[in-house]
Amino acid sequence: MSNSSLSELPVIDPGVAPCCPPLTSASLSEEDAVKMAAMFKALSDPVRLRLFSRVASHPDGEACVCDIQDVGVSQPTVSHHLKKLREAGLLASERRGTWVYYRVEPGVLAAMAALLAGAR
Amino acid sequence: MSNSSLSELPVIDPGVAPCCPPLTSASLSEEDAVKMAAMFKALSDPVRLRLFSRVASHPDGEACVCDIQDVGVSQPTVSHHLKKLREAGLLASERRGTWVYYRVEPGVLAAMAALLAGAR
DNA sequence: CGTCTATCTTGACATCTGTCGATCCATGCG
DNA sequence: CGCATGGATCGACAGATGTCAAGATAGACG
Image 1 (cartoon, rainbow over the protein chains, first blue to last red):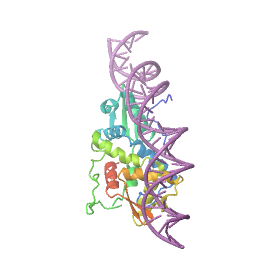
Image 2 (image 1 turned 180 degrees about the vertical axis):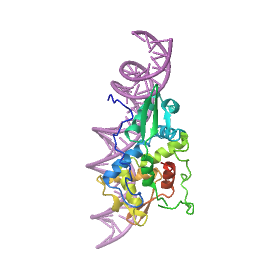
Image 3 (image 1 turned 60 degrees about the vertical axis):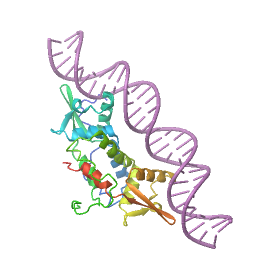
Image 4 (image 1 turned 90 degrees about the horizontal axis):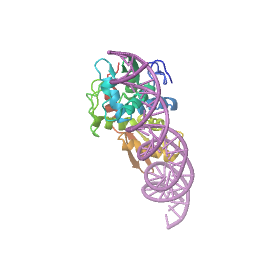
């Protein structure tokens, strides 16, 4: 996995256009359920959710690992979780010099929000 | 698209309504992360997500187990997943005579959607 | 080149999770 | 009461997951 550039990832293709209609309006197909469940799973760990929120709320839209890695677990564990978020298509990473920067993959949040929208 | 729920206030507040600001505007506290991660985790399994969507999209707002249990796994497994969704506060169940009906716990979907809102 | 720092990868381990068969409980019916 | 049916619980088991220590890689800098 000598992946030349950390920024090219499409393990999961963010065909994250409108994936599916809201949960309240139609039941999911098995295929869509697998796709969306993978995204929810990426956010289903407190450490991962915090890492993601730190990236998402960072002023410049991107955050260096060094800025967000203080979440109470070891550095390898942080790296492991960031990798999971990358593989799920939620984050993209790019190395610039000494540091690696993460940013939220556009569209994914919108797809998830759309699925949950329409709550009464 | 549903107009903002400003005019419709959930009567029953399961304690999850105004959990946290959107992920894009502030980073989560550890406490909030644990709470929200538990909800995402409940939806992080394809079978569970399908069961949930079947309940959420059911005409009357509730569904009998007998109506939704055809998702490709055994009956005990369905029951197991419904229990998880109950424990996560996403579904409520009620027995009426022979059958047990599940409905979406109000407010929870809105809380999750709010967390993901603001995506660009 | 050597070394320092930032980050990722590997390997190991305990725990959690999804699944099923078997069994149990509750309700309705004859 | 006895039995059938919808649904929950129990026990077991393979596989996934979160975690860390240790080692590997990549760039910066002298």
